[in-house]
Length: 285
Image: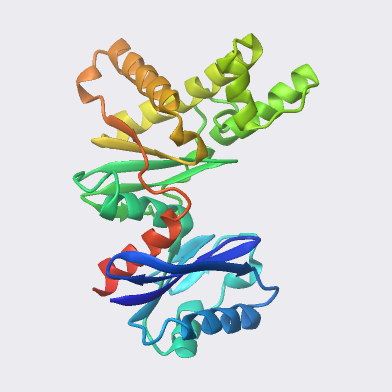
């Protein structure tokens, strides 16, 4: 199967050719200002890939596959509330699949990555905000309002939602405000590693917020594996800190026997492209 695969972002559109379950000929172009310009750029790219079996797209927004449109809002406003599946299939002359970007990243892990053996899994991506996807019996669960996986809106301590208190990016901002030293997420970890107690305190708060939210997921969804994605997942200590805290919370309630496997994702920057291709193969293969 040969596919043109696109990952639409607010500032750039990544692309690649999917053939024999591998990405080739990868590149990117600036996110166009209009839908017509977007289609023209995508057709220009796909023409270089030869004969295609289809086009697979990772997109922002709440992708409503049943109604063949993209609901919700995103930085690329013209994608929404239009018959985009029909319009793109008419433009390309081949089947087109579209899925939410966080869902695509999760699909890449379930189909080809860390979750290939799991029946029930949760994928959590931690970046500037927090999102993810839920898989029940290996099928993605989107919920009644397409909000399944919007983990950043959880309230682990009943006040703030998770995204502002559960990411290194936002904790670095808090550190900068408290100390007057401007740092980013990577530097916050480096400061904590060097013994900076303020940095250690804020990272501990981040781990606690994440662990309480993941504990709630575990006792409500009961997945066998939780896959952590996003830039911080490359640090082994992040996975260990989250894992230890979840176990302690489960043990405090006498249910540590349901401790899930907690692992880092396999795919990094290409997860959305790979997941979009895997989604096409599942739906159209």
